[in-house]
Image 1 (cartoon, helix red, strand yellow):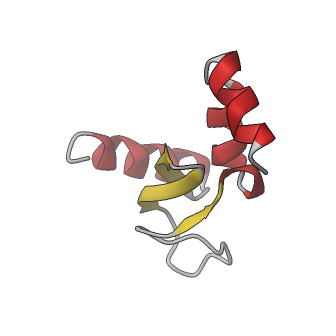
Image 2 (cartoon, rainbow, N blue to C red):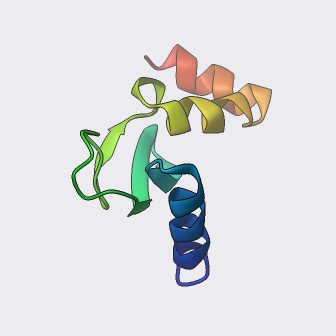
Length: 77
């Protein structure tokens, strides 16, 4: 995370947007890093977990996981 934080901070400054880094853990999207305006109105915060299908980052990660794992995840909903 030490390597990713400055990269996300730079991306956030260049795009004027909040940027996240997260991972899937047991069907949940866990936010590891959040960079951007402290006054933003996004729900997310570092360490927070949400259902993967409820977040943009979670959907992107689900879309790129192996098909069999994605089918298992979707079947468990």
